[in-house]
Image (cartoon, rainbow, N blue to C red; front, top):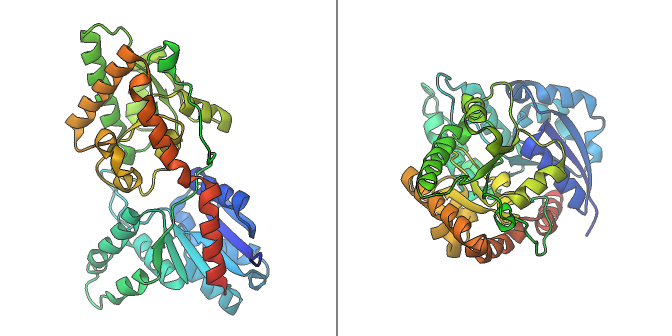
Length: 377
């Protein structure tokens, strides 16, 4: 295989975007040059990043391929570069047509149209799940129909034919892993939160669930039903739920906030017994996939990308349909962990962890490399 020279533009180099970029570059066969902007002011990135990159990147025609994420107007960049722009692939981590809005915020239609024109300008579009691809295409007609006249519904089929799904790789080993859980060390089970500290992850629901489980287990004699590790990135406006949680749970919160060290982060995953998602927005879920890979027993809603990630054999124990079922399943797991240690769920956790090995970059990178080769031809 010819080793391609690839330009990777990431206008929002942080969080899952950064992990994706670093992982792909580390594991790809091809020669990838990364050019970035910091992960802040996402709206301004979508509006103006193309102008910045058009000036700082010299000789784009020297590259065999341009790979970029969705938080930039590719149509603007291609217009500025003209024929110097190489074949282009856009990776949609998120999109502005289906992303939920905080209370009181109205949609800025410009960002939705930026997604559409970026998709039209690209030679190939990649989405991080089938759920994400379908939600983007399904929301597009209704979005376009908001236009008072001259509604370009033709764009939906134009975008559909060049779109496909390629799961992101994750930075964990492909082989078998050993787990060292708190519940196996005669400590209270450890419940993990390792998502962004934002409204779309519904932290209020998460903490409400913990409150009910805590009350239920104390009523039957468990003095400390569980401890909590609150990981993940927080941004300018921290949800009040986390401030209240720090006051409510005190020293039962063993970790509060983002881990600067990747090793520290992984150690918390290896210790955690249970990971819960209450999200209303998740197009893939790297944080959940990482936790599962390191043996944490997941409880995930029957929505978003989660059902397609979980093998059918584990669906009944992992997926919950509503808030009541989440609470019931959490209480059952906690009782098992207290009464039997981690033996009750160790076999299942190990089997689910092993099934997630294909999300490692070692296994995903060759698929990206082959796609890059095909697009550049």
